[in-house]
Image (cartoon, rainbow, N blue to C red; front, side, top):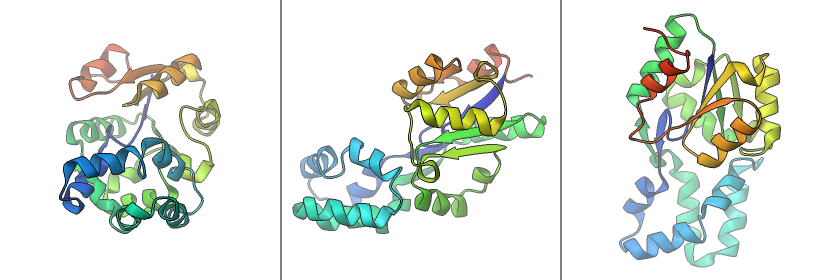
Length: 200
């Protein structure tokens, strides 16, 4: 089995609160901001938007109360990343060292992915890397998985996908991939070994 990694919250810890706890003095107001102006469905939109800054400016006009905070989501976006999930990055490196193909499938703004690549060199280590911002389509839409299959040059049944989103895992399974729903309490090494993707 060939491993396909999601990036956010599988290889990199990502949480907008990591930035906005520095911005907001009032936790309740921050949570209101994250539930409205910077809601998950809008963040998913930025993952496919051709221009991240323009998407933020459009949103700022719609939410003038939070316009300044929204602009910081662009200007200080790198502060939403808390760093690598080291044990999973180590698994990626083990697979690479063993000569195994390793792919990525991630919802990620094209501009912000380029920024993350400057900071985290392991993001250059994939054989095929399918990023929503470059493709104009995001998980769990089946089209982005089909792009992965074509680019990796393998059938879905030969892939095991690791993602922190249950919806994305279910979409992968519906297309014939094995999939692991990654959470903090999941031993990814054991899960990959059980599926034959990782050897001793």
